[in-house]
Image (cartoon, rainbow, N blue to C red):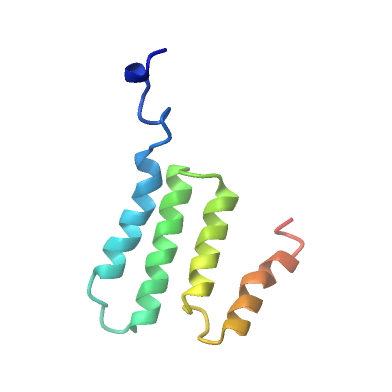
Length: 99
């Protein structure tokens, strides 16, 4: 197989990897609707990007969820206190239904 006959997916590039980032950026930059504060709107942008990644199956489900969880926790969308944010991020793994 020659290099020119390979599809973009075979080379490692996929539009499905970029689509969740485009959704996140579009919502993130959109003006905040009345009734929401900036933090809530940006958290929604992360949520929408994760849902897009899950629908398009751009990565394994666990990876998409973990990336969304990490972005939400590190960005301070959950709680400005990093310790409380970390507790929130890890609390779900203590649930038996997750495993």
